[in-house]
Length: 328
Image (tube, rainbow, N blue to C red):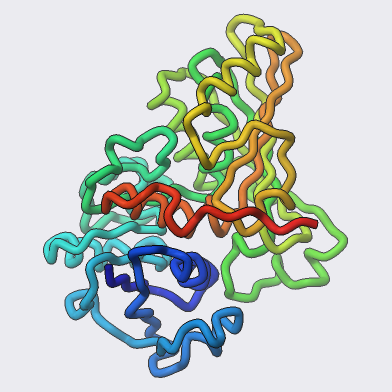
């Protein structure tokens, strides 16, 4: 199956190409970038040197010659091309935020008018597998909502309040340099940002509600001096107390058939470079602390996008994604 990546010069584009090298039935045949038209892909993604001869091209969505497309472009850009791909019958996973939320919520949170809205399955396979399977267009979740939702999902319906505290690596900010991600400001440091107003909270609230929860949800992200990973601590305040054995059994049972969710003590190192989400819980009665760890570029972006592609196209769900992390 021929794959095109629209917006392939960033971290998620590079990860898509790295991961798809291991896929049994998919091959990247086109990687687009307006600014890097004519530039060899490996000159921007040097870890792919010797593994791809692709050259970036400035190709319009209407001229894409592929069976499947990944949209790895910023929000508001994806909506400009999504409709063209849908009309052409090209199956697509959109890694931007443009189709993750209801139209009115999106416009309020992102402060822009949605020019080409349609409903799309939310691509968190552990919760929405049946909607994703066979779909023609899927909205890939945000990185923070992926780790947060998987941490809280088994208990969401039993909670009255959920407080998410996430620590993330610097790659979550993308490749564009900024004062926030400048090495002297990140290295040997820890800082919070968007303390109460991060856009990803809307996705967390949406998914909690879809799980039947009426819980109030709060979220504060922090920037860690690491490249990859999101470590989320979810403080889940319960309507009725639950003991440790009951809570742990609930989580193990909820995820017992999920290859990419492992019940074990989460660490960033154990999931680095992989599509796994490690989770564990500890109860003190009316408060449960649920912790998750993911790689923000894999399970939080490109790996989950490929997991969704596999479901959409009838491939094994773990095709191209079945490998261990890098330890130490």
